[in-house]
Image (cartoon, rainbow, N blue to C red; front, top):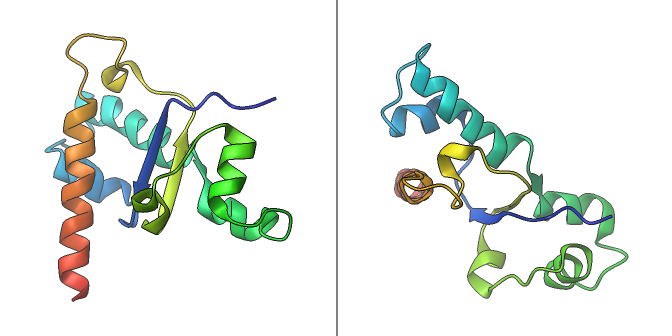
Amino acid sequence: MRDEIELILPTSWEPKREEFLEALGVSRGGLGEQFFGTVYDALFVASIEVKGEFKKYYSVEYANLAEYVEIRYGEALSEEDLEADRVFMVTWLPQVIDRAYENNKLDTVLKCIKKLEEAQNESQT
């Protein structure tokens, strides 16, 4: 049975919970950490990191990552997605970032991850 993919999240940022929460301006131990800690878990812990999965288990069976993702998950990855260090297939979204709800914070979270990725890339050069 296939997992239903709610979000494809390609990133070269090394996911770190504390860094993620801090970038969102969330204080430790508060209600914000409860909400956005769950967001972090959905995006980076409970998700499927398909690049790692492919390299570890399926690289002999499939010609490339794009083919594997298309056959296994029914999703197409862009060239930009394939260039990222990690590609997370998110199978569930907490209400706070679920597009089905008004005033969701998905765009804010994605912008935050993009900034973290840019900051990491700048510090590596």
